[in-house]
Amino acid sequence: MSAHPSSGLAKGRDSVFPASAHDRRRVSNWLFAICFMLLGMIALGGYTRLTGSGLSIMDWRPITGMIPPLSHAEWERQFELYKTIPQYKILHDGFGLAGFQQIFWAEWIHRFWGRLMGMVLLIPLIWFAVTGVLSRRLIARLLLFFVLGGLQGAIGWFMVASGFNPDSTAVAPVRLVLHLCCAFALYIAILWTALSTRAPEPVFIPATPEVVRIHRLAWAICCIIGITVIAGGFTAGTHAGFSYNTFPLMDGHLIPAGYARLHPFWLNWFQNIPAIQFDHRLLATATAMLIGVTIFLGLRTPKLGRPAQDALMLMGWVVLLQYALGVTTLLLVVPVWAATVHQTCAALLLTTAIVVLHRLRGVGRV
Image 1 (spheres, one colour):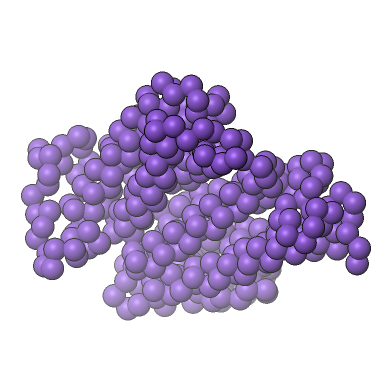
Image 2 (image 1 turned 30 degrees about the horizontal axis):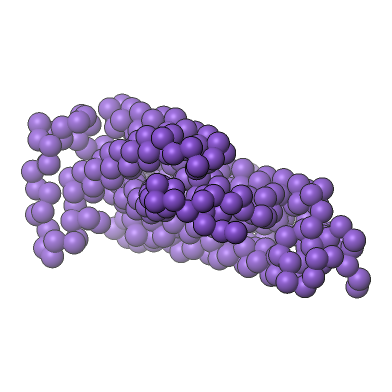
């Protein structure tokens, strides 16, 4: 098939992104829509975890699972399956079919949203590929995203299955964190591709010592946000947020008593509630401080350019909001609404950090 004159193939086989600005806008808008859906998926995942809805669907049917129960008999079958796991016996013993339906719908919407994202990715991908808008390299990359999305669904079931153990009322924290991290990693990859599709050529920024320093700080910010998200996942998975609901001290101490009670020491970071919550607080504070320093230096560096400075300022506002949400969630003892917004805002903060990094990718390039 010959290349469309406005496609990325028009610039040669090595071109990744469409050559036409119109096609780049179309493709990037599509990818940004998928990013928006991923943000919704992250929010839905937080809600299902907080409401204990994730274990309400006891079977994994990747295709037929799109259809919810359509008869009273099927609802009863699903409810009877749920009654066999410890979560029902320990937490929900005695609640009726109406209560089960409430948590079932939350988990069903979460899974349906994931399947819908797969279709939103695959169907336009086929169309853009057939019409010659996408290069072979971009097609391969997007197909990889589709496969990784399917794998994320399998990891989700791997996580849910851990909650069916006889001595468990929730999913295993390690599997929860794995599922969360994979969602964030896929989100970063699609977001970066969307940004690069919209603006494939980086704007040159002279590599002065001040600019290089800010570029390195931007990388450090992305890394520490990622580590803080992981720590937040363990905080959620171990329900550590329901303890030490004061701020800034924890039971009257800056560093809680019993921080290092487990041996070997590294187990405290993943299994010891005082240590898990303290680490998340410490990382969140360090993240906010690092972003503040970077903004201060960035605004004093005119050669950085207005787009990068604007992105830095936006990141500053979002980190303030995220920090306030974290403290609010803690002080109110983890209400569903606050914890859900807090998790979603973590993704928004990471988004701003990726945008900053993307706008700085032209540092030193000619």
